[in-house]
Length: 334
Image (cartoon, rainbow, N blue to C red; front, side, top):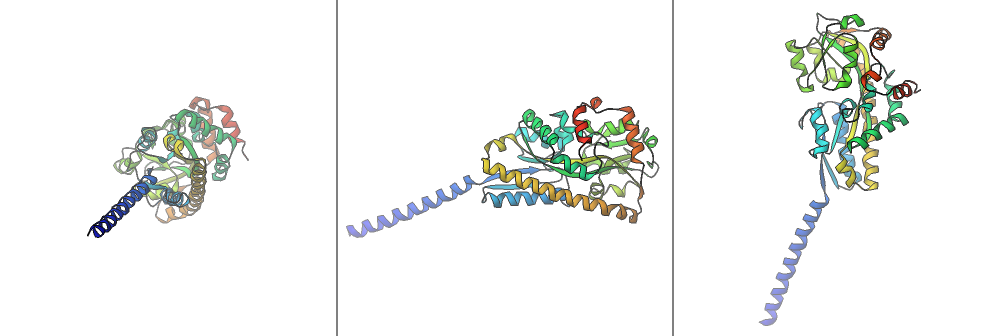
């Protein structure tokens, strides 16, 4: 009887130990996995979202499941200014953002928004790999405590306007009420040509155009398509006044926790995602001019040199808080 009792006790003890080990195993697994939030303001149909999701999956794979990244598109975690602030507050871990917004923390970083600084997409992609960009990114890192991992090509920004206000020459911008993003970097182009820039949050632009709150807005062709601005704006003037980019930024809190190997994985994957995003945007820009014509939009080819000369007559990089030396180095990239 005693032997049987001992045997039962041993079996119960083993079972209890197995359950405890299992529980510890699961909690250990849960503790090992870190959930991260990646936020942006773009639609799920856009390459920025697609390649952010790809990057999240790829980081999960390459870190053996240690990091689980959820991507929050279309301003679901706040407007662009909010998600930039979120990096510091710890409400987001990774964001895609215009250097215009990151430039609020470190103004020299936004120099890429000076009108006509870039000749074209390839010029900007050269900038992304240049020493001048690395120095500007390091300045931002130091000032903000966050870390820039990549620069993504966003597209050449063009002006769209209502049927009554076609923009064919610099003089047509005079008095034009034009929506711009709520960041100082976007003001130089419209202000230098006598327009009235009106900051409106990205999610509210379609309605503002539809209601006639503003006469015009400016964005790259893929954004004009994704946000359906072509439905409420008859004219698309190919000004290409800013060749825009998005930065992939990791919060300082997250970056500090990563090992050297993990930092390399995050950087490699985010650079690869940026490259894939850029190539897709460049391809869609080439296609969209004809597509907008087919939709019945009036696509206007303008004299970009005339616009550039008019801008430079009225403003300099220094007026906008940028360093002339950075401007010269970027202009001379070949």
